Image (cartoon, rainbow, N blue to C red; front, side, top):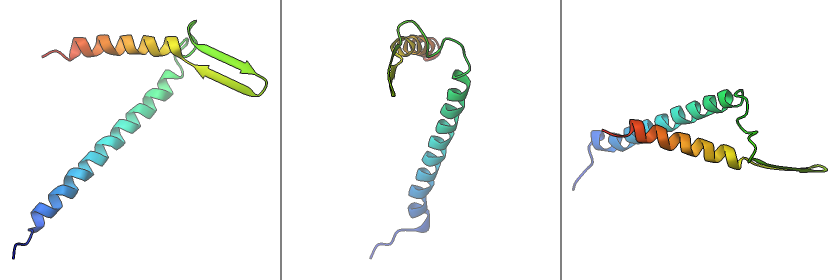
Length: 83
């Protein structure tokens, strides 16, 4: 009869725990980034952003802001992603 040792069964949980900690750190950084981005003028209010308000209904789609962030992230990753 084959039994699993304590070290092999704990390895799976340790890897999962590290992954959860990593996700928590990433979520905390994204939350902090959202707090900072909200204070930058013009982000979210660019001329290409779609904003419709009719009565008690409001629709907002940040099209130009999304394109700007996409271009900036593409440039950032292309500059620093090369080895």
